[in-house]
Length: 141
Ligand code: AMP
Ligand code: ZN
Image 1 (cartoon, rainbow, N blue to C red):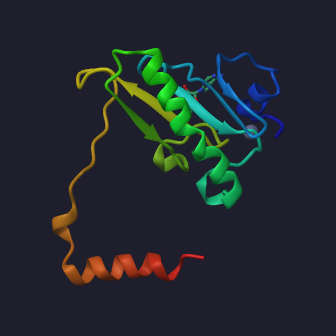
Image 2 (cartoon, rainbow, N blue to C red):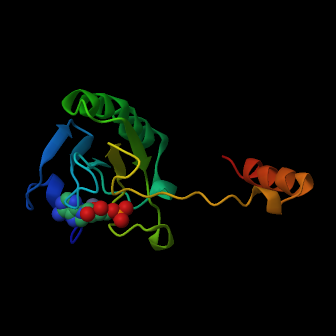
């Protein structure tokens, strides 16, 4: 897509640091390197976010992630874990609107990656929890 920075990276109009490539998927180093090896995995097809994925695109994109994760583990023996993040829409911190999966290697609990899951579970009754789950189930296609 014209004016998409990640499409330009795929087409080699903008340089990147390649990590993995095949016919459908490209992975390259994130320019910000939250931790050493921080990588973005993207489909070559321009798709904005998770809400636009077809099953085949999801299969090809997500199926490459374990392979790249294992390569990172081998490349950086000091790596102790990996966070996998996929931001969708601006409110959820998406800033580039060509979908991408962040692979963020973890080296210690004090490294530069912070992720907080607030615990609001206690604010919902069992009935409300059932209704929430049902609302999602009813809309699955
Ligand atoms: P997000 O906020 O989830 O949309 O993440 C977008 C990511 O793209 C950010 O972590 C940026 O550092 C990264 N990014 C933006 N431009 C480039 C670029 N030219 N090469 C590599 N990474 C980039
Ligand atoms: Zn694009």
